[in-house]
View 1 (tube, rainbow, N blue to C red):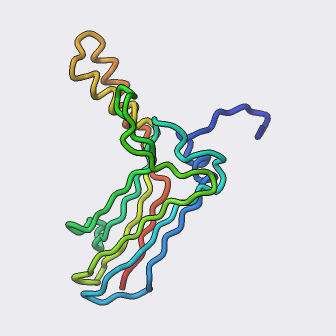
View 2 (cartoon, helix red, strand yellow):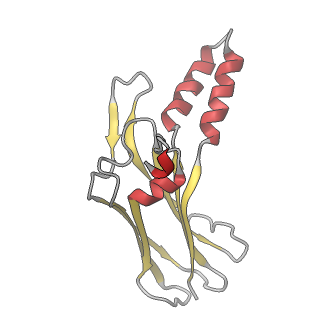
Length: 175
């Protein structure tokens, strides 16, 4: 163990997660003109986790790609999001989807948007980890009927929302 410490470092630890995945982002060319189509590919490889990423139903990873202006504001209609995770109902009875990345596998997003203008426009890619995503939904559902204990549930909900972090962010100038 590092420094003789026995740490349970998992999805809540950004450095541990970064050490288990490889993220690449590429565009089809370096320079664009108005009316060109931007083509980009973001890939997340499960290169060191050793099991599905993310592991179980609690976490969710969100990949967001969008065009942004020189001030970092997203251009309307340019955003695209994709979830990586195992989505189940709050009562755990139904699996809605399973987009986790198996060990050695890869999750790829193909992004395409036509440019109306190019001055100051960048492609932004963000990979956000929500370690407590399932708990967030669970606590939200509990608050609907909560009487006594609602303060504690609201605090737990707040904590689950605060556990989110950006794993990756990259802006690529398009001009």
